[in-house]
Length: 331
Image (cartoon, rainbow, N blue to C red; front, side, top):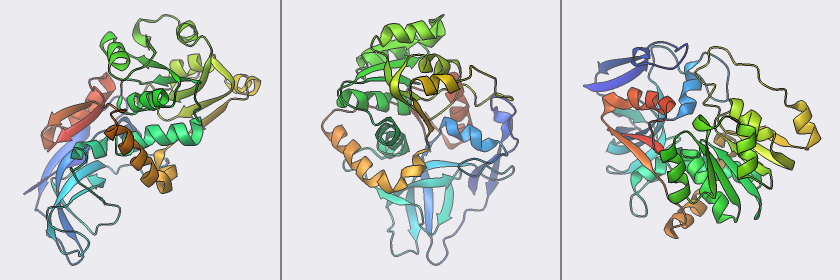
């Protein structure tokens, strides 16, 4: 039999295990031109929360009663497709199933000769590409500038900060515990860090950590921290709106400060960013990330959870900050 995880309900606030359904179905068989895949590693990411809402976005919402999906590394165990051999490993957006068939479209072959397979869900996958392309395409980060990163201990934020250091910038991170503050400075090389949970005035804390102001803000959280960052932006500053985890579980979006005059006064660029906007750039970006890894310029961390049945809980744990870097489930 084949285990499958479905979306049972659309969460109104933070997701719970009651929003998922576990079923078993018959193991599929590949047709002509198809391959049979066995799930090995599953990526869980905060943006999946947005797909649980029935609303228009940059990617279609999940359907109630249907399997969820995310980035997955799978092994080809049967093949009726000349482009794939038994034993190949592939990376792509796949359903939360132990076994599934595919015609191969949208899948990329990966190997573990140069990096662990899990890295293709993290630093060499969409996580690393998101950090790199956000800074390249919107941030246009230059040597000597100040980069501020929120969610700095997370999968994307930690890579973004390291890229800032590689480019010769001052890098300041924002995170939610003293353990995370220590980690981003000691392991990832950030110049300074702010614990937002113990800081009463984020505007002043950012000003103290960024005495020359902020040139590029890589935003993964939104909300009050974004408001404080905007008040510290330099002339011609750039804000990369990559994520807004502080708002994902809100039933209503709260009203914050009006940003129009701040943007106009300092000629600030503030742009929403999804990595799929730059698919054509994935190849060169991945090559650059791989070179930095080989040169020991990029460190990465993973929180690895074991067991197919634990995929929903691993996803829920993201919203309590229980992950250190990339959250991956090993099946």
